[in-house]
Length: 212
Image (cartoon, rainbow, N blue to C red):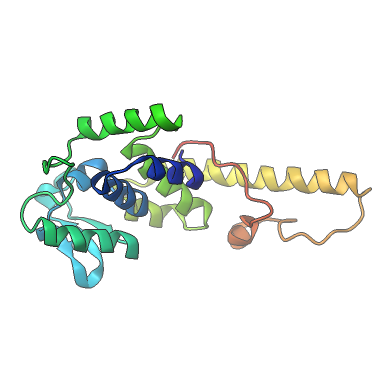
């Protein structure tokens, strides 16, 4: 997983706009690496802020793949559509389309500078983890991620929920022991599925060092 602070460190170490664009859109959308490397202007639905890959170009080849864009990702996409009206939107400093090997090479160079090891798939997994920990249900995350079978993601979501509950109760027990079991008002005293969003608050956010 990549923390927001680590992502900012990576961005700060990158000087060229071309790689920053690829990093930003991957971070914002959680798209698969092959989607960001292959997307073209013809795939962009600007009115609905999304990329749409026909089934013949989508993973599995059975259903269209839709990648929803945040305002930041849409801004990058629209700018690149002007620069590259035909062919892949994302290109390197030589004007050539990014390849998986070229992107991995850049990540290795960034890791040497910063000590932060990352890749496009790590950004995708981090994106899914952020949604899950913000309270978005596993089925919705699976659909947004383009999974045809949400069962794998649902398994990790259950693990995330267990970790969240354990962390909240462990911290609550610690606070009570220090206060000699006096009553304290804490928003996470009894976390339930209905109060999942409340449980993940600024003062009791659990660790997210597990894979999704």
